[in-house]
Length: 139
Image 1 (cartoon, rainbow, N blue to C red):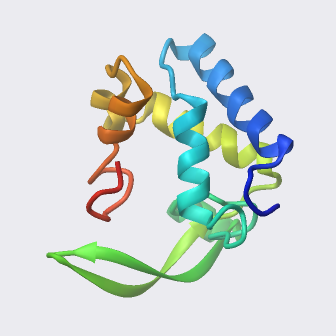
Image 2: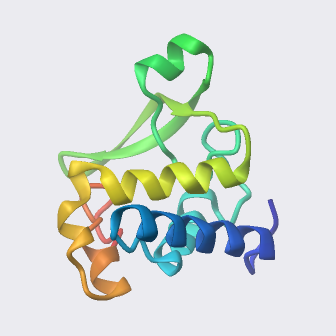
């Protein structure tokens, strides 16, 4: 990973995921929003949650059981305050895999139906607030 600005590798991974999931599902996951999330969630690629996980994507039980997850300290916004916790985060084989999984989540998960109806990147980002991340003002 590189410092700001985003490397060409990161930009291309975001664009590739956007194009793939738009063609597959018709849902635009906006590469610009993905890049903003990459920057926020990983401090511009400096702090990963799990192996090759710049998005803070939580691990499933199956990933934990298979050894494809890393337990990391994090802060979640709960009942109006930040709470420190150790949580399991998904591991990915590559940066491209992480961007594709992030795109899959946004393009297919029932949690993001409202965001998928957005007609702009700005609205898409706002519709992630309180769902993708617990922090107020995330959108």
